[in-house]
Length: 294
Ligand SMILES: Nc1ncnc2c1ncn2[C@@H]1O[C@H](COP(=O)(O)OP(=O)(O)OP(=O)(O)O)[C@@H](O)[C@H]1O
Ligand SMILES: [Mg+2]
Image (cartoon, rainbow, N blue to C red; front, side, top):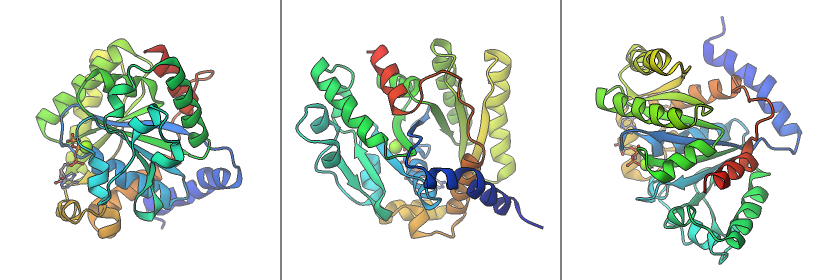
């Protein structure tokens, strides 16, 4: 009998991977990875999820949209000379600000540019949009790792993207803050789609229980359907990999967390989220919504 991962893998290769490899037209789907509380594992998840999608034949770019620390750089053990700031001020082209991490994973560091993104002149904006669109034409997924909480920037990233993956641990404070984030975003932008990722779960049951708290509350009080995309185990190899500055799916590919992210990515590709008919999607839609909110 086939196990679940095997069946999913087959489904992905039949339904998702072949069309994308066969055609040059890329999806360019924009995803944010967000959380209510800080330090719940967004950056580690973003990086290893991106690597998992990449290992399945997808083209993925990470955009570090955390205004504070350059999280992704540190986790990959590299440092960026140029970042979004240089792109926004037309000092560098998008090719020059894209850095390459392990396995050739492309990423853009936001740096101080994230603040500037909120108040661009029209010329700078036009340049930025054109550069982003040329890059996005090559990508299946663009994943923004945002900071925690409900800042003005985070709101804009979340409400402009095609999908928001909300990361929480099973801790009550993390769950409450994740729900608060969803509630605030949903209050002003009911069209935003959320999926839950439970990180640092003791086991599958604990993950499902944590997810249910948010899913049931959102259903009852917000009339909002949220799904659990999957979970990542609490795994000491994650901490070891952070110390080594090598993503855990590369440093310890057989560790529990790496297997969980792999499974989650397979599931993600097997069940493509439904698109609202007629709505803008991909980077064009993202930029369109971003500009509407400027
Ligand atoms: N699955 C896991 N198992 C064990 N420890 C983990 C796991 N995920 C994250 N951690 C621990 O949590 C720390 C914070 O993770 P990470 O930097 O990814 O969080 P974050 O949500 O991006 O934080 P911030 O809000 O500051 O950006 C890691 O350095 C690691 O020690
Ligand atoms: Mg982070």
